[in-house]
Image (cartoon, rainbow, N blue to C red; front, side, top):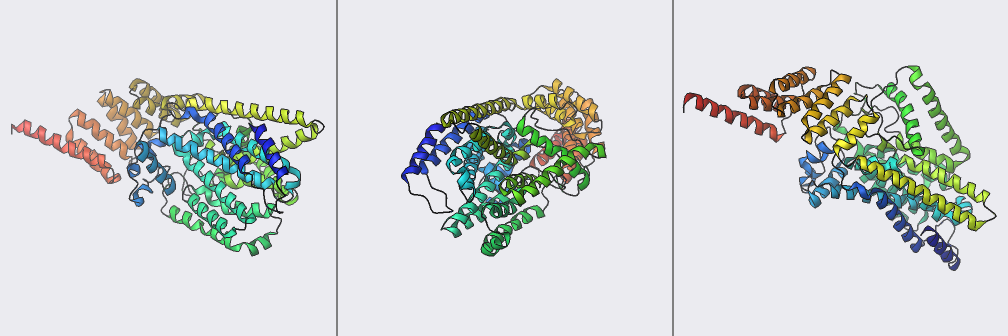
Length: 572
């Protein structure tokens, strides 16, 4: 199919007059063929993801989030409870409300939405790469190969298994949606540089940049990315760019106010920011040196893929010296390349700019997550594909037919292999138990992985396994209140009330403001017939979490049962 579309593209070029300088030719047939190929690649890699369950942060953000249950009013559907993945991300919240409208909390439409976002991002990436290769000085070198190179880059990126966490793990659509809006912003900006409808394309770029700011905070670097792209590929100096296009960049910078407004309320202070006790800015930056190199390794060797990494803090010089030196070399090479080989330097700038909000010095509770590599991966893929294309063109220059067959074989084999790995990784996501069993096997020292596996067992009604997994979590960290809570709930369901009370009391001792521990101890006291103690616990839980309606329902039930017991005792 790629070969046929390539031939058609060349035939159309021969029948058309040369396009005006600086403008990319519009070949609708080839573009549609590219969209069809990329849709097929994305669907083939992810069609087995539709049956996967809600996992991890999906529970709070979707299953326990009442805000998604109606589209209107928008003030509700575009908001979310604090300290959830969608807090302060109104566009993601609205997308969940749309999914709820379609399928309630049945998971299939959520996965379909994620896949659609992924495919659209791949098609947009194709458009950016193709137009870039057809612009300026690159046109003479890559003009005839722009279409197949762009399709190859986008197809490999779509099929790469590193993207599974941003696509198959439902709530990480925050990452893939941000990536889509980043790519569309850049694409519209590129079109504004080339089109006679400059103002319309600029307004579109600003609109999508603003929407992206409402999707995820990592969108913050996109105005800078557009400026760097302009400086590299327009052939103008930065002074002339700002003189000629100052309105565009002023409007793009203006979208930062959206992000500032959303972050003002601090919707996730417990998971990110300079107030975190887990990391200082320095120790976080040191830890990220190893994380960045790990991300790069996964781009070339995507195994093992892990849902939740064990937290390891680089504190001593030996923990980060080698990795830090490597990152400094890569950063220096990017700066040097921007000066002498700007197109190459832009790929390095793309990689580091997109990663910088999560992989620099602003502390985040979880220092490593594979979904952060979703969009930076495109820079590495593009660099490898273009390098390989140039190498094969030089080695097989005397035999164009052999070159075409060789390239096509390698591309199909690479995309097929990566899609197969993605399909296999999606199998790990089929149930909560399967994904956390996989995570525990790869991160046996992670207290949270064992805890989450215990929670998955508990929700599946396998309480003995839940108790065993929670106990293993406590063996790693005896001061982990969530593990005591999970084991206490399992004990309570099994009717082992004294053990349940003991664990829940320990959870409260370790975290005096742990409302779930008070609430579940209140439920346990209800089953034990100790209604006054239950009322005390529910009241304390309501003080800590006044907006949760089920706590008030539990309190009312405790009062009702106490009245019934008192009436029975007095004979009334």
